[in-house]
Image (cartoon, rainbow, N blue to C red):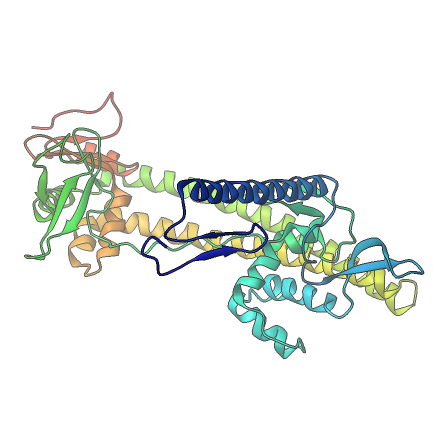
Length: 404
């Protein structure tokens, strides 16, 4: 505009903005832009207030969610007198199928759309749409605004509460990080962790204080040096014969307590599963005899299936836990007797790191780059009784000592 290549003509205002426009004309244009912006902002505020008011009243103000449709009632002259959101008979079964695939078959979001298409839906739903459907609280009676606030609504619900809540269990995200043998083991005397990293040029691994170069300048320790100190500790770790029976008795006692608790919980879960299965059988009998119509039968059956699925997951969890107790006991004994051999012979970084995490509560590096180890139980008992190790802390302030 300033170079004269463009001219702006405003027909309704009977004005034009050119390179030769006066200061007054430019001021008038600026004021017109400000008025237009103010008008737009006022409309936006009115719309937001209207949507907030409707949400608080439990009224939907957007497109009907998947599985629902807008229904309009008109008068004799064709004017809309009433609006309502009703279940869409054509999509209702597909909506339930989405939740059932997720709960009963653990189908990933990206595969649910394809499976739904195989069942007869006219297109493949994108992964993001499927996840939005599963996370939408509308299906359990709530409207959610953009701030995350929930307001109850009175529209008919299709998805049973148990089925919806079963879908909300999020799988933990796997963190893809570089694993080092010393990860999470060593701390600096200042209290901050020592974080390992690999040098770009040499490929060697060093540990640097996480407090930063301004608080702890020049702290850069080779991992090999610290792992050498660790190996000295592991070589001196013994399993004293005089304490073997006492340690084994303590481990067996803890194992028996854990196994008893698991068995009791498994018995309770299986009893609940039997009761739910009996309810399901009775419900099916009522349907076969014609005592229950399909509209009441399907939601109840889906609810009982969701309960059975939840109980099966709990049963599997406690069965796995029972196996892990016995496995953990065997691992603990093996680590007590062969700590150094297991550490030195392993070629996997993750295994070595797990061994150190199991043995050491922490390892503090002082100003002279000497390491003071603090051990987890019951390994502190073994170290305390074996002797011959310098600068070992047991974790018990009454027993911490310098062993010369």
